[in-house]
Amino acid sequence: MKLPPFDYACPTTLPEAVQLLATSNGDAKAIAGGQSLVPMLAFRLAQPSLLVDLRKLPDLRGIRISAKGVTLGAMVRWRDIEDDERLDTAHPLLKAAIAHVAHYQVRNRGTVGGSLAHADPAAEMPGIAMTCDAEIAVVGKSGAHVIQAADFFQGALTTALTPDEIIVEIRLPAWPAGRRWGFEEFARRRGDFAMAAAAVFYDQDANGKAHNAHVGVIGVADRPLRLPAVEDVLNGRAIDATIIAKAEAAASAAVDPQDDIHASAAYRRALVGTLVERALKRAAA
Amino acid sequence: MEPRLTLADCLRHHLRLTGTHVGCEHGVCGACTVIVDGAAVRSCLMLAVQAEGAEVVTVEGLSNDADLTPLQKSFRRHHALQCGFCTPGMITTAHALLSEEPDCDAARVREVLSGNLCRCTGYIPIVEAVLDARAAYQPKGRDRSGDRA
Ligand SMILES: Cc1cc2nc3c(=O)[nH]c(=O)nc-3n(C[C@H](O)[C@H](O)[C@H](O)COP(=O)(O)OP(=O)(O)OC[C@H]3O[C@@H](n4cnc5c(N)ncnc54)[C@H](O)[C@@H]3O)c2cc1C
Ligand code: FES
Ligand code: FES
Image (cartoon, rainbow over all chains, first blue to last red; front, side, top):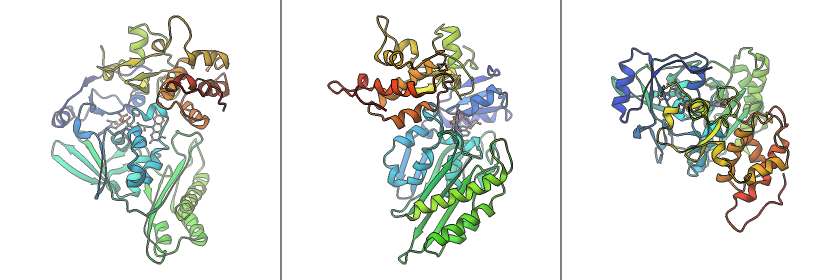
């Protein structure tokens, strides 16, 4: 499985990179960590004429934390998130989810931007982007703009990006102290893609009632999903065993997974309920 | 150099460093693990052109001409290889891990090695060999060679 032939460019400025992508008739591709793209090349699932390496673009680097939230540059690697202790409080849900991404060596190369653009339906970063109402900042030949996560993911390996667009960064809204959250994933082997996973968070008012509930799942559809039906169960209630059981049932009812080689639809539906239940138990504990 | 050449093939075919093994060629088995600027990576998922200017350490670079290294000796002592196909990737991965985290525990070693496939040993001797080699990676004066999984 040798890679198909392609040309290679390693621009040092963002406009140059956009220009290279824009002038190749949609036939060029960006390469970040290569941890999804190189296997795609090996299997001939992608045969671009040109690869534009993003590794020398300074605008795509770094994790920034401010009162507005957490901004991850597109070239931030899983490893960088794992190593950044500020994120333990600035975004514990992100940190917990990213701990499930891939294996040691892949984590040293794989990036946030690559994962968003690749849009695997079972990938953690797109799931967190959906769950947290993230904004994805991109630059293309028509300039810079921001895409809401809910509009970004359009199907398996399909996004709102046009061929000339590069993800610059993703912005996650600020995470208040005291927010309740849980992340639960099931994979046969740690580091493998999730069979399914659930991310939940909510804030609590003075009476202990939940509000602003966000519930997201991955691995059960062609893209990451928010589950408003489950959020409705939680909002305005104290999160106790009865509510958690209702949320579990609502989660199973809200998804419509397909049978595939890894699991049957019925199994995945049950699994999603269980993962939402576990995540809520953790959040409420 | 052709852009499509992977770092793994560059090492093996151009530099004749055949210690780096190639199993799956799509990032699943870990046999091709090398250390690029201090970080363990899969050389079948990296283009050779992407390693421009980087320091690449292969299993050859971890050996010691005169004798086996402490990590290699530990593999031998624990019978941590049979056919040996996975061994270069296990050694490079374990070396990177122990260099970064000389105090890692058995759970961490298992988690990290779960990305490297071995079809012979059943992993237990490999995990024991890595744990036993921790002493050699301790800053001077500390010795944990007695610790067990
Ligand atoms: C064995 C193995 C296990 C894995 N397990 C998991 C897992 O459990 N969970 C998970 O989420 N992922 C997993 N991955 C995938 C891994 O996280 C990838 O790193 C990630 O999906 C893609 O990031 P990358 O930087 O490697 O992107 P690349 O492979 O370089 O690129 C992927 C795609 O994104 C495009 N792209 C990259 N960067 C940008 C950008 N800034 N703007 C626009 N387009 C861009 C490329 O053109 C390409 O189409 C696994 C990979 C392997 C090999
Ligand atoms: S040959 Fe590189 S991971 Fe299998
Ligand atoms: S010793 Fe044979 S594959 Fe590991």
